[in-house]
Length: 447
Ligand SMILES: NC(=O)c1ccc[n+]([C@@H]2O[C@H](COP(=O)([O-])OP(=O)(O)OC[C@H]3O[C@@H](n4cnc5c(N)ncnc54)[C@H](O)[C@@H]3O)[C@@H](O)[C@H]2O)c1
Ligand SMILES: O=P(O)(O)OC[C@H]1O[C@H](O[C@H]2[C@H](O)[C@@H](O)[C@@H](O)O[C@@H]2CO)[C@H](O)[C@@H](O)[C@@H]1O
Ligand SMILES: [Mn+2]
Image (cartoon, rainbow, N blue to C red; front, side, top):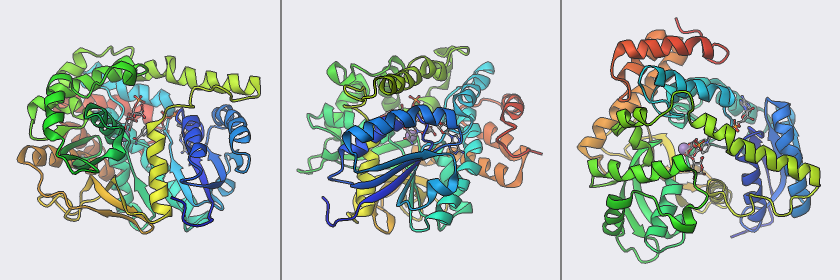
């Protein structure tokens, strides 16, 4: 726990994110673990950020008045005097996510936020914005750490490796945390803190090789495999009472992913690579996940912010008891701030962590988190099946960064054509040609 009297200053880049209020609640509820003196928001959309910021000002004033709070669109004000930067931006916002999902579906290809052509399009948009935030951080607070969870993480991580190799940036994801909390419940334990594990692969593309009871060392794989074979990661009951229908489908679908490779336990995102035809057949090209979010999460978040501002109080708000996503981030900051060397997943250059894969590819593997950043833990060899899958997917991710670097149409086309979700190079070309005009404000001109 707290080992000295330091208090930290943090900025959330993407203050207008739908995840911000939940994160704020989690931060201020964990003051014993990660004490704060200041919270700032930074966004390029002043109006969107104001709606979230005004509600968070009330939450902080009521619950943690000792923490100074402000929000701004000015980078100097935002990034000066901070210890941690949280990257939570969505370049092009939901309007662009909608294109990422709907354009591929027009051609019978998966339309998904971070996988397939949509995920690659999103990654290409994110690269310059994330680099700019790193540069702001290094200019105004050179000792700070950036914890980035802005997608597409695999592509952003490869861009960090190439363009800012020495920067203090850690790219993370909460999907494995969500799944491990489910695994813990399945085994009668409380949450992910109760599990020890070996997981390896890429972001939104990986497998658990080992899962153990953290305290006793008991091998939990037999119990988990038996459960996942029948139910996927769906827990049901009270645990899933607020889980949206499409997420329920995803957790159940893990059953079919497990069936293909029963030596390990899959990340739920493998559904898009193993069963793209099923995903397309079950998608509505005119109403995708973005529409669900606009009608549900975004409406609820902004509605609740408005209610708080009008009432002038945050009593009984909807974020008081949730947000696994945010708990993980507090855990990570605590580990870095207090040099605890706790184990979490991060996206880093392989350098032998997966022994039969190249050193210079970005992988998602367990790392020890401390004051000096992350130290990977050796995962042993990837299975033959996993190695083949990983090399194809990671090459797509590298080609997207090549396309960014060289302004190359050909590289982006190759990235789409190589991807497991795309059946044909001509289909890849049609998707890319539709994506170029809508992405013009964000992508380099591809020649
Ligand atoms: N890694 C993970 O596990 C994980 C989990 C959940 C969400 N995410 C990611 O977190 C991010 C936020 O998601 P959301 O659904 O809350 O998005 P959102 O659209 O609600 O909010 C994103 C905010 O980013 C702002 N923004 C866009 N470009 C910016 C820039 N260049 N500088 C500063 N701000 C900018 C937007 O104006 C918007 O307010 C996304 O990248 C999403 O994919 C990651
Ligand atoms: O479709 P969305 O926007 O609901 O989700 C996309 C994100 O999905 C994962 O994050 C989940 C997380 O696993 C869950 O625990 C909870 O916190 O919600 C998150 C967002 O819904 C994934 O890890 C992210 O990278 C995706 O952006
Ligand atoms: Mn993720």
